[in-house]
Amino acid sequence: MKNEIKVSATIEADVKKVWDYYTNPKHIVNWNFADPSWHCPNATNDLKVGGEYKARMEAIDGSFGFDFEAIYTKVTEGKEFTYEFGGRTANVKFNKLNNQTEIIVVFEPESENPVEMQKEGWQAILDNFKTYTEKT
Image 1 (cartoon, helix red, strand yellow):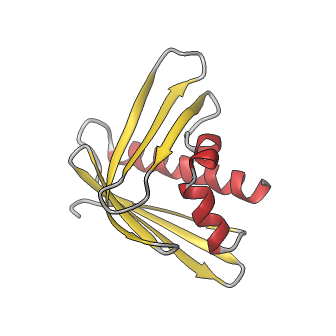
Image 2 (cartoon, rainbow, N blue to C red; image 1 turned 90 degrees about the vertical axis):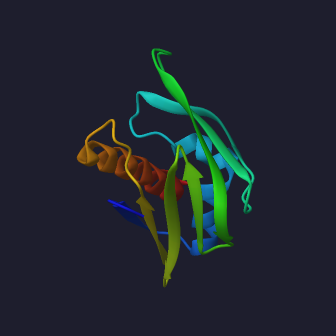
């Protein structure tokens, strides 16, 4: 991947729970947004090579929203997956650390927004995931 951006978080939970919460649509809708003024009203996930991931992200006030869609190109159950979206690629790794799990997301940036803004947005979503997973 060229000019890749990396974000990560260490979750106080075992890798099985972290994988489930990160990939299961019933959980995705509870954390997949960068800011409390946004939400993820629906998500679907067919987690296999060639399978499709879709998530709707929108402002709670209805002023703006978009659909995030991706196709899986690699899936290693419980460990990592790679997907393509909008001509770009992202890889998500789940590293077991005793009773914790480290998630590392590496993705290719788009050219419309500053790299730092993209990194902050993806990190905020991952931080939201961490908070949700550790509380539930």
